[in-house]
Image (cartoon, rainbow, N blue to C red):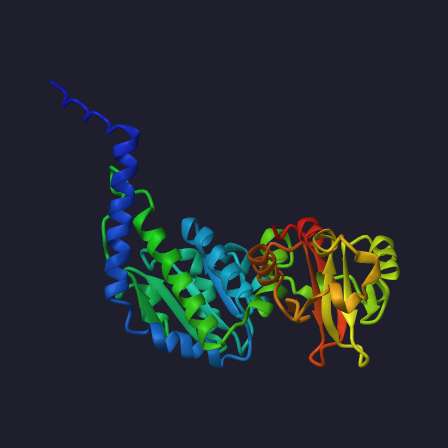
Length: 324
């Protein structure tokens, strides 16, 4: 009699097994990073060129992501397909660059021309593989050897654990480089201008209304003039400035309602909220949003270091930009 097939696991149990196997593998890697990890970071920091990443098949897919992560966090990098490299794209890999080649077995034949090219032009080669004695790792200057752990699929053959480890190692490399360079949020936004992330990393200066649009009145301005200015500008707020042009107070629609009795007999300085909350032009939009939410206000004056108002940020501006 032919042996019966083992009954497949329910989908939920299969998923849990995969995540547990891969999670345990990541912990092994975290506890025992490759000895050449820190030297690899130093090598990339010292390079004057780009980081070239290459791999075939699933390793190539992971390599594309590693290259993209490096590039978006301050390390110039791009992916070169090994087959295309053999047909002219080797010209993209130049002296001064660093190569990261990925092969789980370390014996991927398509990487041969890249390995030879690096040797010919003395281009430093970093290998990522689980086999320390493989062709790739013997050729590499630095070796990021992965732990040899079982794949997470039922037959133990589909690239799962190995690709997860490679991807995580690439993330660790990118973040280590990022922190070594003291990579700042404003630099991060330079490479991520689109979408919600880009909006939250925008600065107040990039979203605010400029000085020509500001609703401003002097401290001794009568309330009739102040209300006209608030109405004309349409922000529901007016800034009050002192004799030197510094922002000394803010009047909102709420202030008008609270002091409605005898309102027209007052001057702007008598109605204004003193020492208002403001923002600097370089403040991140996400930080300004947090302040506005905490203070329950819909508009924020932007002031220069000398206290002069240079802009105004309204909640509607944040909504339009996608920060909220």
